[in-house]
Amino acid sequence: MLRISGSSKRLCDGITRRDLLQIGGISALGLGTGTGSAHAGQGGGSSRAKACIFVFLFGSPPQHETFDPKPLAAAEIQGEMQAIDTVVPGLQICEGLPQIARIADRLTVVRSMTHEYPIHCCAYVMTGMPTYSIPLETSPRDPQQWPFMGSVVDYLDGRRSGTKSPAMPRNVGLPWRFCSKGSSSDQAGPYAAFLGNNYDPFWSSFEGPGTVIVPKLNADGQTEDVRDPHAGIDATGRFQLSDGCQLPQELSAQRFDARVHLLQQFDATRPLLDRAAEIGNYNAQQQRAFSLIGSNRIREALDVGRESHAMRERYGISLFGQSCLAARRLVEAGARFVSVFWDPFGPHGASVWDTHSNHFPRLRNYLLPVFDQSYSALIADLDDRGLLDETLVLCTSEHGRTPQIDSKPTGGARHHWSRAYSSVFAGGGMARGRVVGETDSIGGDVVDTPISPKDMQATAYHLLGYDEATTIPDQQGRPHPIAGTGRLRKELLG
Image (cartoon, rainbow, N blue to C red; front, top):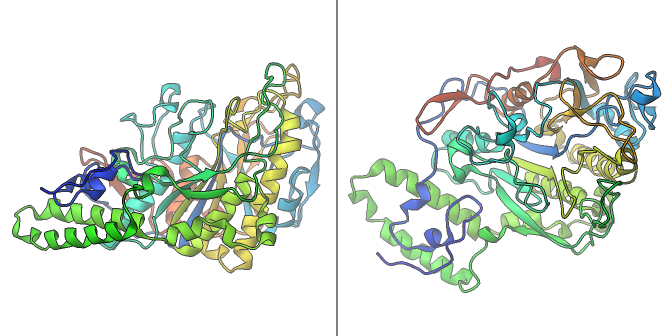
């Protein structure tokens, strides 16, 4: 075997650079994938959405200060922020979201999200796994984990298309690997689990400093200032492929192409081998790796500098805003499932929206203004370009926050609460200008139309072309429903 030297660093999809650049015998490219195939129901969905943008607000926004204000409740419930009208008659949202209020006629606001885990259960919300526990929060590769929604779509689309390699990655994560830039531990959630790490998201990275000192996470104990890029960046900051998705510096594109050509010549003799099934799998993984490493298409889509200054300003010169803009560009370029994670950064990054202290200053002066500008720009821009009807946009989090304000910490606090919270969906077959579900007078319990995270997933899969009966195999070949116990919720559909 002729072997090419190179770094053994893992690539974005789980293979190594050395494996990628090795001439001949690189069947390692086929390792780590799920066995078996997709089963019942594959293709029974409505397939109204060509793509999905998944916006995840890690740490959990409060329902009261976003989409379910309680203007008639007592001050210790309502809080310091008021409700405002939207363009949808009868729908009020928090005064901190004035731009979203103006595009509410394009949204489905769900006020009745609910589940039983008031912990940072990202993986429970993002996957079909049936139960959850605190130890699983920080164990992304635990064998009990289930595959992320984007990984499931990537896997099923690959099975549907056979060996055809996509021109763009089907599963992309922005702005960097989930929870890799903060002081909190790695969090489970957006990984392929038993499907194999070849179906993990294709991660970008971001280069550029934060320019805005954000309100402290803990006003009673934190002394350090944090310049969080989610609040503001220099316009010269840029997205790029994560380190593992770059060619080694010592290998030029021309040399890489030459080696690919030589490898293809070696491959011409492979049909003589009697390992057809294994080689077929190897060829598919090899094709996927080459297409991702060698193509400029994803690099160009990540280059938000190609947009006009006015468009970039429209989204906001913040990491969250530019991530939303990059997500739109990736969808335009053909990406199937793009995730935008607003997650921890730097010391005291914690869980961003996890306002156990300094609740109102963080919301007023950081979280709500950035979210309001960037999310509203994403929805309006997709609609202006005729892309919203074919692009599903899911915006959610792990849970909500307590109805009762804790006045003891400086700036106030709301703590974890999963019995009732809000999410907002748009495009791709979701209804326009609709409110689904209702909570009680204090926003503490669902009183009408409970929607679980699994129901959200089942409905999203339906719109992407896969019904809830579709199954995926674990490493032992046992079939599992893609959305767990989730069911299609027609109340959400347009």
